[in-house]
Length: 250
Ligand code: COA
Image 1 (spheres, protein in one colour):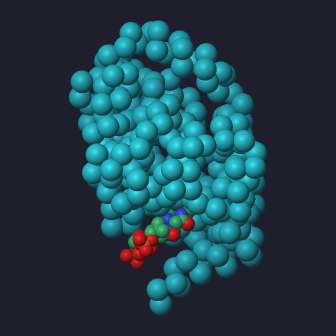
Image 2 (image 1 turned 30 degrees about the horizontal axis):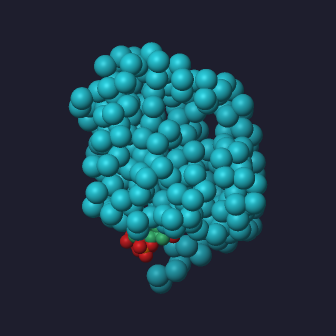
Image 3 (image 1 turned 60 degrees about the horizontal axis):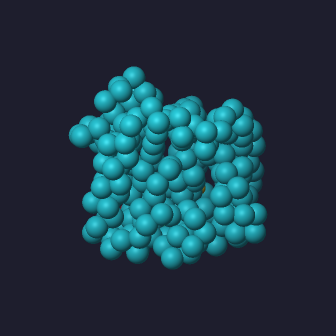
């Protein structure tokens, strides 16, 4: 159990809130496990008709905890079981998933949006995926899903060149459905989640499943990326970039 993720159910919506604002909602192992639990367990509750994931003002999620990557890089580790479990939970989830995104969304903070069905973003949003400048590579099946959603060239600029997207650009390329003032993001996202929760659930589930197609390809890509990620974490490029992040304030 961790209080770094809060889960609450109301009116057919399960709200999963990342709650580590002092670290900009960087995700550590207990947080991944808590979010995977919340997603996986929702499957058994017919009364939960929609999931919503949210962060904190100014910080949806600063990505994987870089201390954990640094530790893995020094000890021949990989993404880690909780991360991979969370990614498979996202890929296998059959309930509609809404995201409320304010402020920074880095790394998995951006790539998890590819597994969402409806995304509300604050005007302060900045989506970025600095995997390659960290000596790493995209995860969460984003190497498959991002080009599919926004086209190869824009995906290349984001995932490989690390060019961030502001809210307008994210909306323009289809990563975001609606924009709002930061203080109104959660409310707007919850209104969408409640609307989804009031629709006939079987019709929603079937439509969503048909639109998303079989998740097998996505599960496989998660595994393929994770295998390469493990190799990249051991690289001198990654070790140097991770050390540089924590040395930046010294
Ligand atoms: N892992 C671990 N700690 C992180 C973190 C991460 N991904 N992101 C932020 N933090 C920590 C910082 O180390 C800092 O901790 P401290 O107060 O103990 O020094 C705290 O969160 C606040 O971050 P700070 O950098 O001071 O805030 P900022 O507003 O200047 O910048 C970010 C916010 C998100 C732009 C910046 O923190 C950042 O670039 N983080 C790394 C993002 C990243 O590369 N994620 C992995 C992608 S694969």
